[in-house]
Amino acid sequence: MYSRTYKTLVSAPPLLWVGLFLLLPYALMFAHSFWAVQDGTLVHHWNLTNYQKLFTNSLYAEVLFRTMRIAASVMLCSLLLGYPLAYYLSFHSGARKELLYQLVIVPLWVSYLVRGYAWKTILGSEGVLNGFLQYFHITHEPVSVLLYSPFAVVLVLTHIYTPFVFLPIYASLEHIPRPLVEASQDLGAAPISTFFRVILPLSMPGLLAGATFAFVLSLGDFLAPLLVGGSSGTMIANIVQTLFGATYDWPLGAAISVCILLITLSLLFFAERLERRWSFK
Amino acid sequence: MSSAAIPQPASVDEHAPLLEVRAVAKRFGARDVLKSISLNIAAGEFLTLLGESGSGKTTLLRLIAGFEQPTAGEIWMSGERLDTLPPHKRRVNTVFQNYALFPHLSVRDNVAYGLRVQGAPKNEIPRRVAEALNMVKMAAFAGARPSRLSGGQQQRVALARALVNRPQLLLLDEPLSALDANLRKEMQSELKALQREVGITFLFVTHDQEEAMALSDRIALLRDGALEQVASPRDIYARPATAYTAQFIGQTNLLQGEILRSIATCGVLRWPVEDMDGPAVFSLRPEAIRLSPDGKRQTFEVKFRGSVRQQIYGGASELLEVDCGAGQLLRVRLPACGPLNGDRDFVFSIADAIRVTD
Image 1 (cartoon, rainbow over the protein chains, first blue to last red):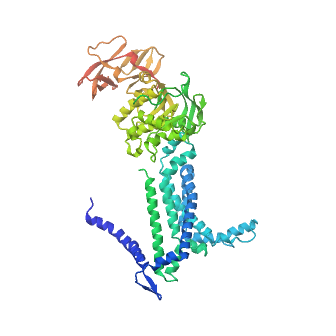
Image 2: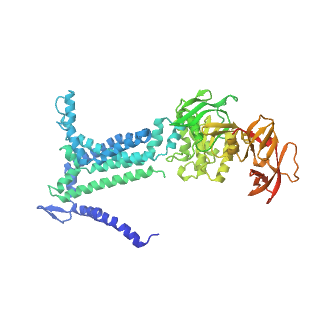
Image 3: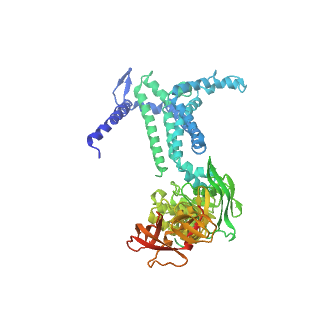
């Protein structure tokens, strides 16, 4: 048994950290969302107008839904890329496993901004992709929808978050005892049947974790839309950023943030419940 | 285990082997794990692959199940080439060492797995699953998840999951090694009874020679990827072909010596043999040696005088270490007889000294 003093000493720094940098900011945000701005100054006057604006002005709802659509698309795309990759690496890559694993991980060491700008040079009207298309006479003028569109945002976010989706899926696939796969074949299941009856159910915790990562991280992203989104690819975090910056309407920005937080929390709760259903230890 | 349950598999010609392993070799990198194994298994037989770890016994099992491909040779079952089929198309089922039960499925669904993936008639599945679970006395646990079961219970479920498919051949990969000693003994006798009851051919892998002796119709002893001897437990014990077999199965004294003009000489021991001259090794089981209270011997016996160096009490019997002169030590197993010391007369019959190849 550890002494009380020891426990207090050990747990104090992280508790202090969480209190100062997580709970306190959330409390402030929550409070702000019920205040108001009058003549360019913040007044501590409790009211619900921020939330009313949120639900009456269709702009916010539109951007919020677009954001969720983009996040869902990113989740889907990165699952479609990440799961087969993780499956291949875990079950069929043989001696190349280590190398391929490193190749998947390496992009994580490259700055987000660098990758964002790289996509700008690829997708832009003077960009690599358009140059390629025109050189081979597939198109005759630059295709403009490539850049500054929700498509570009989904592309960049998928590129950035696929490793985050890959990792938990790969870990859960690696944890599947191989004799289970052999037992399934032994009992007469063809490979495709083995996949759907044994491998997929047993990798569900990883799949759920990866999906949650992709959705939640995309939901709060503001850099990708800023770099490649244009006006049609604006996401909710960009609006929050503007409200806290140029527009100087912290209360409204806080109210939107509270909404995003609630969406995220309910999503995490839901994922947690699902994950518990799929764990068998 | 209870009677009734699984019907006999489609009967095959009694004399044709069910499984034929023809000159099968397996190489992993630079290592020859199996060197040209040829082995036949008769329908309904309980055959044990016995060997130390690394002898290749599990590899041979995996070749038959289809998890590995032979480097050379062929495997045939009931007149069909087996080694070219993928595992899911072989009428062979396996009981894995750590059972490999599906953790996300209930006991019932584990047992039903094979029937479902092979498209057995839907209305037949519950009945067959119930039969199989009754047979291994696990019906009460049908709804439980495997993680809730003890090792012995998981073992039973693994058996039911394999047998419910009515395989022609059941492969068992050290299925009892994870159980504690008492449960292992109990499961041994249940397994043997079950095999007689269902009449399915069992190919059983173990490193435990006692287990092999207790269960098998025949034992195939593997050593470094080659078959050392294939024989019934009684034959392999009474007439080991090699020094390795004699030492691996039970305990023995290996007597090194030579034969000269029809007399075998091993240290101080001498007896007549009808064999060619030359160096020779004999296996003499400790229990073949007896005390000779009156110091007399029959014509077919060898007598020697030795001093008891050590006596290990083992309940029903005692194991002695006897120095019969010139530092030659023999192990002698006697029925429990109380403390012994000093010099004694011992005899063994010449027929019990089995000539083996080294």
